[in-house]
Length: 241
Ligand SMILES: Cc1cc2nc3c(=O)[nH]c(=O)nc-3n(C[C@H](O)[C@H](O)[C@H](O)COP(=O)(O)OP(=O)(O)OC[C@H]3O[C@@H](n4cnc5c(N)ncnc54)[C@H](O)[C@@H]3O)c2cc1C
Image (cartoon, rainbow, N blue to C red; front, side, top):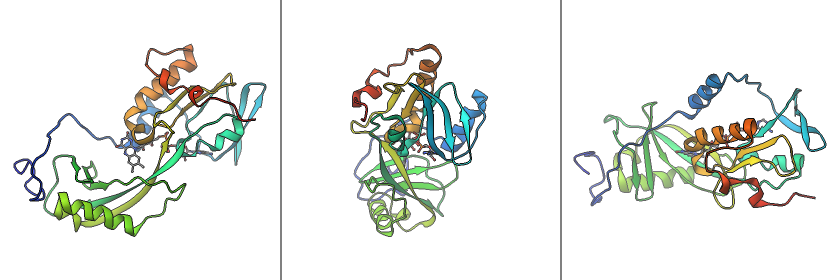
């Protein structure tokens, strides 16, 4: 371990070396999907859906509306908001995660490091993203000094230099988590033209190509060769009265 990374804590007695892992910038990845598909992005705050029978005709925005032939509910941690619009149970809850982006003076780390309660991910921006935490705090996205201290305390056990490294950015974000930690993919029960693509929890970026492909398949052909049976919205059953 010391040969690979001499700055590792002296108390670390061994490690498992794995390779083939890589990193993506999720914002750029999303934009790349959009460009590749030829999509037009219309930003806005969705306030509801207008429907006729079991079919949604329009997505209502705070500042307008969009007519639609089909609609995908991909609202991440905020998915439950659509329960009232669709009358369908969508048990996706927000799991808060905080990350410290730290600068190292002594040069880049060449490996992701995970262990001893700490995760260290050297990223394309030259910073080391450290964390991450998991807290059920509703939609709270405030930055906690206590959590920051806890992350640094864990780093001290694994990579002491990072424990005191300069903070470039502290972030808090929400993961969309379901009761069985699996995504919700497929047609909304009772709706002809509504699909869910949500609940990917801690792995939504990694799973995004499969989520996008499978839901697009369902929308265009009614079936998919990808194995998504276990992710059906029906497993949470029941429509809300
Ligand atoms: C700290 C942390 C670390 C993570 N690390 C990884 C990782 O290493 N690998 C990985 O694969 N995943 C990781 N994840 C998880 C990943 O970020 C999520 O699974 C993924 O972002 C979920 O994508 P999504 O599109 O379903 O939801 P989101 O990315 O949350 O997108 C939902 C979008 O819907 C919009 N929205 C909601 N309601 C409305 C409305 N009414 N009107 C308009 N827009 C609305 C929101 O503004 C948001 O833009 C991590 C998450 C956290 C918090």
